[in-house]
Length: 167
Image 1: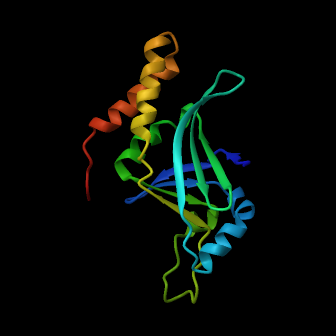
Image 2 (image 1 turned 90 degrees about the vertical axis):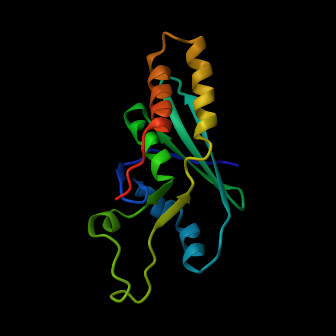
């Protein structure tokens, strides 16, 4: 099974979810979007991992998989880690493959006969971040000199203790 690795072009926060824009998904996953738009329900699953690149950069990756051996890996660099805490609070993540939807918003349903967004909603995206935290904590204890591990551990730890504000 071969998965495409992509980096978000934009990360943002809405009232209900973290929004991640990856415009290459519109083309690369067009067959998946067609299945969604045809009304097919597609089971998916995901896992969180910490990986180290050849250049010793730490990345947090969200591996998404669905039927037929397809998959996608979304990599979050150190500059994006602050959004991990928000993912724990929001619990949902929307992968947008269309800048237009972000810029203009979703159309009013009365105005559009058949709205077919290029978006994937991942519910309970925070599931598994506790295992990632445990893994990072173990690595940080052994490698105390690596500040990235300590920073990530604190982000994941702090997100657990932050109160959620509902508006």
